Length: 178
Image 1 (cartoon, rainbow, N blue to C red):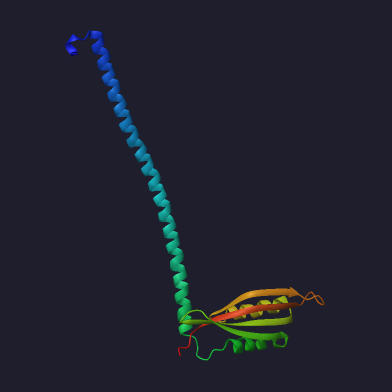
Image 2: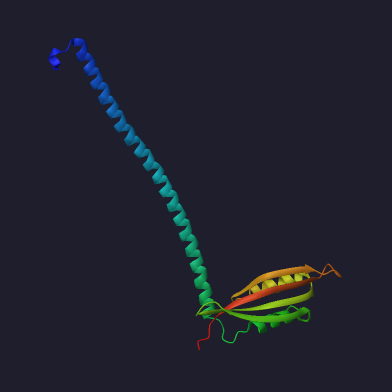
C-alpha cells in the first residue's frame, strides 16, 4: 500500500496516529527520566542521613578514644606500690567510718595480656546516707583510676536512718609479666 493511494482523510489519520505514537514514546521517556531522578533524590537523602550518622559515630568514637587515652596515661603515671585496700582503709579512717566496715574482699581479674582489674568488695554497716555519699565521692574523685560498681543499699530494720551497704571498687593496673 502506497501513501499516494490513500485518501486525504486516511493520511490525516495516519499522521495523527504517528503524532500520538511519538507523544507516547516521549511521555514514556520523560516519565522514566523523572522517576529515576526522584529515585536519585531519595537515594541522596538516604546517603545524607547515613553521612550524618557516620559523623555522629565518629564524634562518639573520638570522645571514647580520648577518655581511653586519659585513663591509659593515668595508669602509666600510677604510683608504684599503690594499694587499693590500703587506700580504702585510710580513706575510711579519714571519714571516721572505719569501725563500720564489716569487711574488704579483694579480687583480681586478668582482662587481657596488658591489664588486670583489681577490685575490692566493701561491706559497711550502720552508716548514714551522708557518710556513704562522702565516702563514695572521695573514692571516685581521688585522682586515681577508681570506679564504684554494684552498689547495694539496704535500710536497717532496727534504725531506718542507718544503712547496710555493699559495693565494689575497681581499678586497673598493668599485668605483671612473668
